Length: 276
Ligand code: NAP
Image 1 (cartoon, rainbow, N blue to C red):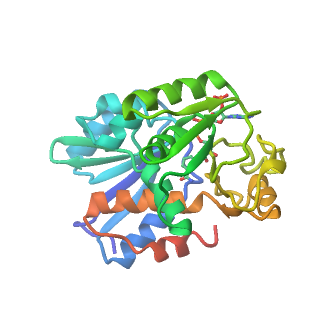
Image 2: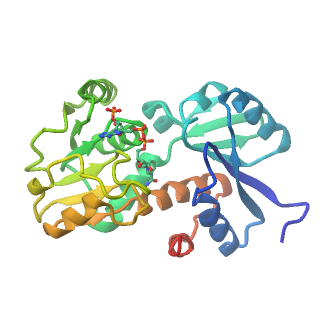
Image 3: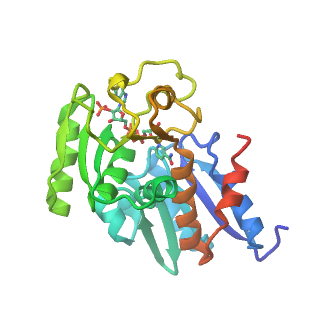
């Protein structure tokens, strides 16, 4: 029941009307008996970001998620960043702590937790990351901490930039290339481009799927559709496949705990998204 003690959480981005976060967070809050509500706010201009952070502090809003296109732009209005947000250079979660707005990035760890839930600890693996955009940055920085990663991208220059940045910050060698790079020999492939996403599901994957073999794990960050064309092709070739729902759930679960101090029930979060 909403009453005078109800605390506010939310999401800012544009567009947000198809976001699954309100469904997932409100189900988890209810399950834990926490008197919070999570709402989606469609923010049409980055000009409003300053007012949003100030307003959140003034109103005692507990925190909010940040999605496309504001994950980078929000940073200049925050008072502090945690290690991951600083490393990745983007924020997907803000916590208001008194008069401080603190930025976090839970996307990379969320992706790791989703992957490890399926295949166990991921360490010293050869990982191919397809794409060099925002989601790739979070995943690449996280996975490069203890794996050998290669980033390939439509615009190889962007893959080179990201790989150089990771090499410099984490002091590890990161390979890069274009989409024609030979994908044989990788243990894990993580696809981070929007190719195959609803409503453009019937497209050609951006890599040569005939090179996928049965001992590979193929993860697609897309969760709509649940099985992308890439995952279908990978499954046909015997690979283990993982969609983006797990990452969505775990990045949310980490944020939930940052805000409320309570670990959410992952099964309840999963169930809340089972019919979307
Ligand atoms: P983004 O920053 O716009 O990056 C897009 C990437 O895709 C870039 O590397 C871009 O290459 C590449 N790309 C775009 N169009 C392409 C094409 N026609 N052919 C080949 N490559 C193409 O997007 P993002 O924010 O990283 O999001 C990417 C995907 O991840 C989306 O589908 C999103 O839904 C998903 N995602 C999922 C989660 C989750 O929780 N599961 C979280 C975040 C994002 P160039 O550098 O050449 O432009």
